[in-house]
Amino acid sequence: ETGVTQTPRHLVMGMTNKKSLKCEQHLGHNAMYWYKQSAKKPLELMFVYSLEERVENNSVPSRFSPECPNSSHLFLHLHTLQPEDSALYLCASSRDSNYGYTFGSGTRLTVV
Amino acid sequence: AQKVTQAQTEISVVEKEDVTLDCVYETRDTTYYLFWYKQPPSGELVFLIRRNSFDEQNEISGRYSWNFQKSTSSFNFTITASQVVDSAVYFCALSEFRNTGFQKLVFGTGTRLLVSP
Image 1 (cartoon, chains in turn brown, red):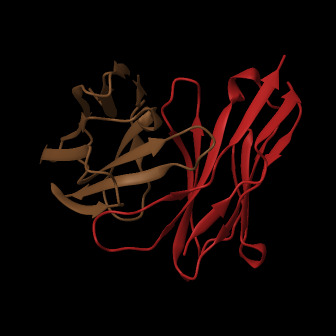
Image 2 (image 1 turned 90 degrees about the vertical axis):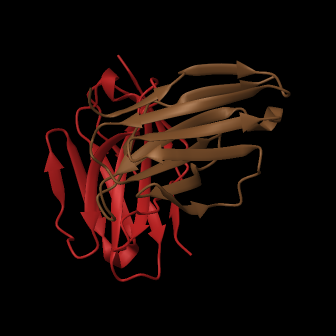
């Protein structure tokens, strides 16, 4: 399997639920990212992991909790979300500093 | 701070027309990278091109071409003889040079291209 795979593709959750988004890459990349894409807004960088260590957290609310157990897997744990958190959540990976990202297809999250 | 502006929110063309998507960027860095990504309805952003700040040569890849002009801080993207399959949202992005093992791309708000038959 190649590329970046995200599961699930779609998720509907209530505000009191706990769920997790999963991202997997088999490209040998050493950095992984979570982005949020809302309608009519630029892509927002949420978290960056480099060599399994979190190196960036862009003032993301604590109801979003990332986890990177190894260089191939990245999770985003969700709890007590708000309706405004509904968005497309994109995972990406990169092999080093300057070559750009490979993106997954995203998880379309709806909070009801 | 770095910033990318894509002033065109949506463009509609008829198949076989040429179309240019504009991208203007701001950065204080002398070394930086510019990117274009395509996002079809499936959601995944697909890499199209990467250009570093020292290479101002225009590039052509099939029906796609890119015009990088440092003097105007622009990195425009032209599709020649557009096709329905070109319908997508196109993002321009900028990143500063880093040697830390990861990078931070700053994206524009995207331009939605609709190509009708």
